[in-house]
Length: 163
Image (cartoon, rainbow, N blue to C red; front, side, top):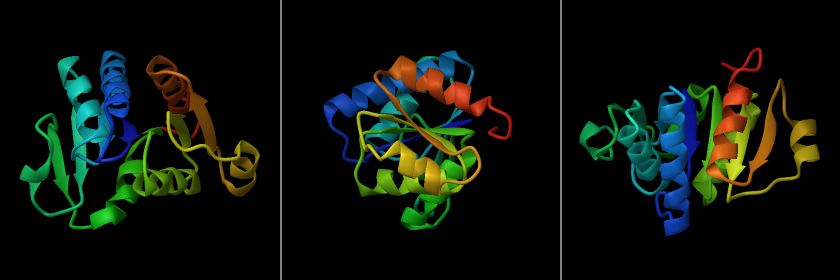
């Protein structure tokens, strides 16, 4: 599984990028895991479903009906924003698209867990500082477009100890 993170209040460009990422992940045979709600999460799930993929939504509340319509497997947690840790822990790699503070928290949690994180049109962090502070094989990779984001995430997920 590859985790996809991004804002619920996504703009049109973020939604376009997310839908392309979801489609490309599905075409590569990957299951998409995300927060299961709107914005980037819905767009990535829609892209994956339109390409015949499987989607999992880790929901902040207790109601599985709160998932977006493209979520195959809604997982209600009742954890609120803390569900971000479950989302990133579930992916062999993480793609973060755009984002606000929730997305930034997912990037930080993923790096603390030793995950490889690919950013696309969002937060930028000092890669040397990330390497110095991270454990294991954690890395922050910057993609220019959805195809590169998926290629980097799949490559990172296939590294020993990352999937």
